[in-house]
Picture 1 (cartoon, helix red, strand yellow):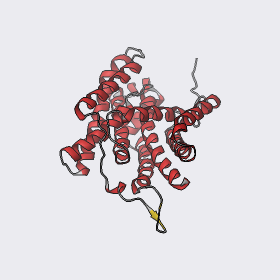
Picture 2 (cartoon, one colour):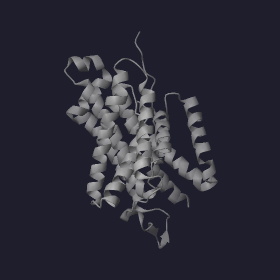
Picture 3 (cartoon, rainbow, N blue to C red):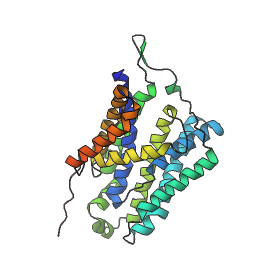
Picture 4 (cartoon, one colour):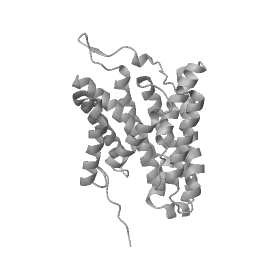
Length: 291
């Protein structure tokens, strides 16, 4: 049914949008990104499973601990894989973040195991029904886009109305002036990476009951999220969120109408086609450089 594909696509697109927002945050503040973002998503899902299913903790506590550790992982990425290179003007952080993500994936594989696990959720047990007919989707499919858009709105509000948000915007607009005004730039950049990993962890926790939890689950998600960030215009927060929704809906509709074998071929071909026409993304703007 196309309606169920549309709803599930919106939910999946919200996940891509959340992860893409992480790319936006770090790029806006430091002109760098965490290419281990997919690993951050995987970490959130795996930790939530481990705390809830293995240790038997209440789900709310398991989610909280998993997200806190995801944020800590983001701080670690900035400290050991980005800062040492970016501070010297080197682009080696491109490879170091990828390498750190590979290290994490393999550590999880050796400790968590290779077998996919299922994370039970009361919101992913009985499908939603309408007039006695099943729509083929779960309540979690409906909740995910609501939470995704709410988090995007919250991030927008925090960036405009809080001290830390103002500091981050100041660093974005003029790094030198922000430093002269006493804004701790290194701390702001570190917080941006922690927030980026936190958003990816939220995506992982939300999507875990709908997919099997395993050490490799973040790889393709991370690639798609980066494609969404570029497609939406990595300098536009709402742009990357809207691009995530469009990408998810397109992916779901292609799968429903043509089969999963064509999904990746067509969606990424569409990304290439759009970027050939709009190199700065659908909602991005070309950077103006003063010489």
